[in-house]
Image 1 (tube, helix red, strand yellow):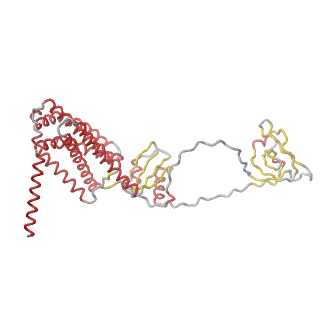
Image 2 (cartoon, helix red, strand yellow):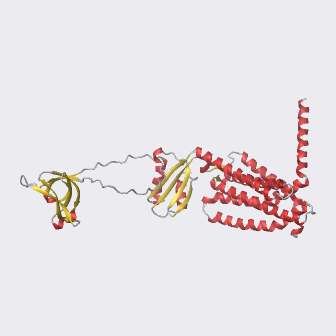
Image 3 (cartoon, helix red, strand yellow):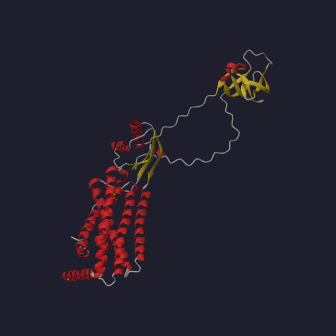
Length: 438
């Protein structure tokens, strides 16, 4: 069968019936709870940034969380030995949360160093004669083992604070101490002192912190993978989740409004440009509902969740859907300008036939890449790839069977006849109800 003889517009009623059935099935799936399974980003949850001491396999880390009862854990490698882990909200106390370290400020210029005593001693040997003195000296040309100028002469029996010691001087006359006394700071050999008493530093034991469920997870991870550091440990509250849902909804709505405005502007030279914008939005809504229905089904069957990657994929699908529709609309505009006297139905059918091969080839190429990533890639972007897979199929179908066909239905009066038929049906139902009530 030659493509130029293919009557795609003549099949529009069948296309509409198929799309209506798919959309109705999606709406029924969404009406059955749970309509969609929200991921951690849309519910309260916990995030942890872990850095291991040695390389860790991402699949093994995911299996460890699954064994601990966290099959929902989403693990994303942030480089080498670091992983970002998202789980449902863990039962942990407030002390278990770790915020990211703030940026290190520029170091201030050092001031005078404070001397800290390591002990105390008494000047003079134990057998020193009464009235004898001990000399505190300066180092000779920076060599603390050899003394130079005089600092102070203190009587034996004076108590001094020992702030430093130099055992490396033992071979050249004895260990040298740096001492602090009323006369100043100087050096003396340990043999010229007695009664050294070291300062006892109190040992402060860190209070044990009950980390709750976090502690259980960390103990198991350390047993399996060795040492690691928790760089960040925080929770996503329900308030933040509601904000994420609102932002995602606003993003989709704003994208739809801008697309409608752009299409109306791009085809402003065509008769009824708002019809092109309306047809593009109808095709877009068709694709979004099909994707939502597919994820509702996957959520009920295999527990697939929606997350921010799902929203990213949905926005990408919206872009693909509108792009395919605009390609067909642009060819329709060319055909109308080239053959203004030809019926609009003929121009639309010619545009569909001319862009059919291009649309199918582009979509098939993309689908092959997406399928390869689904089988070979990680689970981190699985939801994104599933959205692209379903959305590209629905978008390719809608650009041929929905967007352009809606233009024909508008131009041929199908929409008006359908509206009139629905009006008569509603009025008939109203009269029947009134008669039954009378």
